[in-house]
Length: 75
Length: 349
Image (cartoon, rainbow over all chains, first blue to last red; front, side, top):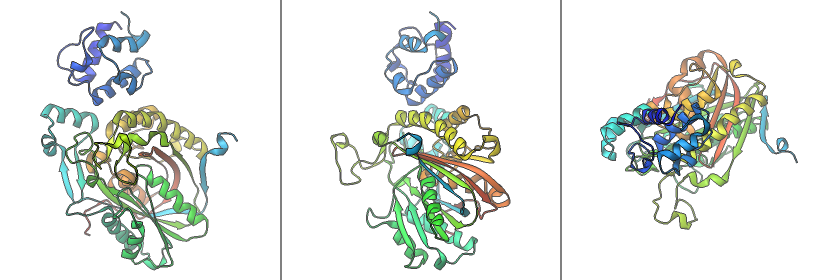
């Protein structure tokens, strides 16, 4: 999966209206709250990335999210 | 000493549950009605309903307390099991919301129910793990010689959360359950765990004698670090279930039910996926109908959704509670056609 496909999946699980882009600030995404983070933890787990909520809570941009997804997401 | 030797594991051969009654708060609050009052938008309400299963909850009214709910349940339990209060030798009340911080509310309850002064009564201050903990102590008392023990569990949680806190107020429900435990040949085993390093994950500040810098500025209501609680649950509960199955020497297939504490649908579906337990064995809807019933959630699930099977059949079930403390515990027990009527709404008949 490439980064665009990954971000589309993230937008989907977050129920975010619109598309997410590289480098976008997570803080500016209204649905990036505790519930949204839980949904993304599930998504990351499904694609084989082992992360916990605290790690995700500290991320700043969508690029950090792509990085934490590891080898499951290509550039 | 090895880790295996330091485990809190208990095995019983002569104690069993004979009846379970749960009373829930009389007021039914619908999430769609309270959401806007908590400052939530329509979209946020819909999202929380979908993801967490928030739907409605039952809470007490007119200053009713946990002791009131437990008294109502215990009276119905004694009547339904045709047991005289005078024959009960011990009463354990598991709650975080006693009538007073001192004395133990179990003693007040013992008096209200008409148990003899020759019975023992004491509180256990535990939350969501409390049913399994309370049951383990009741089974221990039976195994040590008593014939009949009542365990009361529950909380009037609506009275210790900030009603304006949209993160916690719409989750909590009020319930009090009473469970009759008697001496009878039956196999059961328990595993119990605690981790005080997670004390701040769920805490009511200013509720005891200590005030720390972290408590400054916080109200004396339940404070929840949702992420920490979720992480704890996913880290600890699946491992506990696996360990419990091994200790009990059973497989999930051999169990009739796996009944977990019911914090919300999201956490339970997540656990269910990890533990690979089928829908028909693992109820997950209790919070959506009654709210998070804290220590009463496991008996509350039996009363709310499994009255028929528990009343009509011999069953082997796993119960698992987990939460504030941090504290978690599980057990595998056998039950045989117990008295388990559907949940009672309010304190009346």
